[in-house]
Each structure stands twice: as structure tokens, then as C-alpha cells.
Figure 1 (cartoon, rainbow, N blue to C red):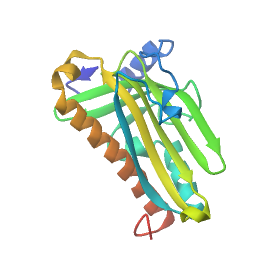
Figure 2 (figure 1 turned 30 degrees about the vertical axis):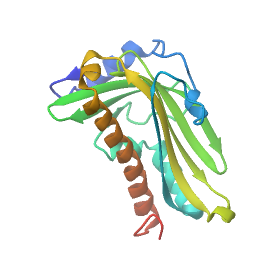
Figure 3 (figure 1 turned 120 degrees about the vertical axis):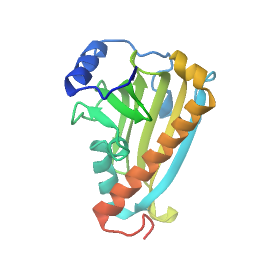
Length: 201
């Protein structure tokens, strides 16, 4: 959904209610849980970064994920204000883009919550310009790998709205920009939370 003006909180809640019981708009649900085997017929995204090292960095990264800092630090509005990271949670995201507001609704399809790994995947609902799934996973690696804390992003998508299909390269550029924004946002959150100058410091 594209809007010229910023939708009110009430309108965002209304959109959320309208898609609450809707079906996902793609068939390969939870496929992002297996990033090496994404479905054919979609544009694939695989990206990642090192956020820091050790327990403090991992704890900060998980807190940032739970607080939707990947989205909010890019200026995206997430409704409801504090959506839990649980399977079935539905969110509406308002993405300001030039003179437009792009509204995207998604449902969390899978969650991993382990001592050294945390993340989730969410899939598109009818109010969304694309069709597909995206996942964000934070992992704390073993000391043999330097104890690095990493963020991996995996996605598959294809245009659903006519404007996105017509946009072609511009739409893909915006997707790449958002992906890099997610990586940068969580890295900044970890740096601030741990007091490190650098994610590798």
C-alpha cells in the first residue's frame, strides 16, 4: 500500500486489524530458515555483518532485535509499538520513501531462540508491495571463530504491487538500501549498548 501522507496511528491499527486473519501471499512459508535452499522464482538476498564479540555484544544484539531496532533506527514505524517476537505476531511497518509512505504488513512465521542464536522470519500479508519472506538471525560463534557475534539477513521476494513491478531496478535498489540499513542499525545499537567505538573493538 502506498500513501501520500503519513498514516495516523489509528489508520495503521485499522490496517493491522484488516490483515490479522489473512493468509500469507506466498507458498514457501519458513523457507528463510534454510538460507542455502531458497525457493526458485524469487529474487534472493543474503547479507551479513559482524556486530561485535562476546556475551555483551550478543545480549545487546538480541535486545535490539526484540526492540525492532533494525527497523526503527532507519526511521520505519512499527505497529503495534512493542510486538513480541513469537510465531503468529502480525506487524505493520510504515516506510517513508521520498514523497510516499509504503505500508507493509507481515506475520512472523518462525523463531529461533537458543543460547547462541536468536532470530525470526516474517512473511508478507496482502497489504505489502511484494510477496515473500525475510529473516534476521543473530549468532554468537564459538571461540575458535573469534567469538564473533554476527547478523545474517536472508530474503526471497518478488513484486506484487504494479508500481513495484514497473519500478524494476529502483525497487531492487531500495531493497538493497533497506538491507544495508538493517545491518548498520543493529551494529549501531550494539556499539551504543556496549560502549564500544567499533563493532570490532
